[in-house]
Length: 115
Image (cartoon, rainbow, N blue to C red; front, side):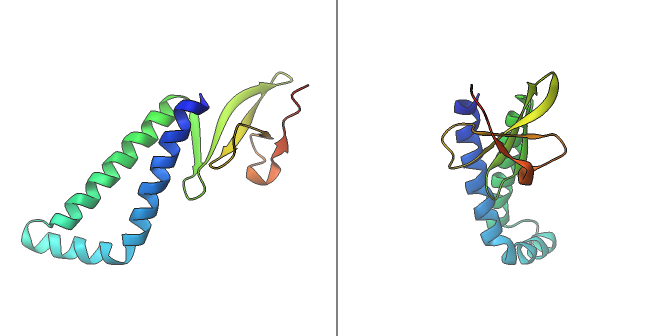
């Protein structure tokens, strides 16, 4: 599953970074667009929002929960000792190496004991 999710998360992170970089000018583009029937720069940015939304839904449709796109944090639902937990992966990590209770969050990550 990670081989499918990883490139989607990385692309979402790139789009998110680009949008955050453009954030200061975003409101000005919206104001200008509203008064003159459109704006080419805003149209390009809206395509990025659409792509981000599509990728997010693709990942969520796999049952993966996106937690933080700034760091590329996602959780996979799993069973541990008969209860639901999250397997936790962050962009840059090789494989899934951590898990946490559903209510513990990132701060409660614990190494997976593969034995």
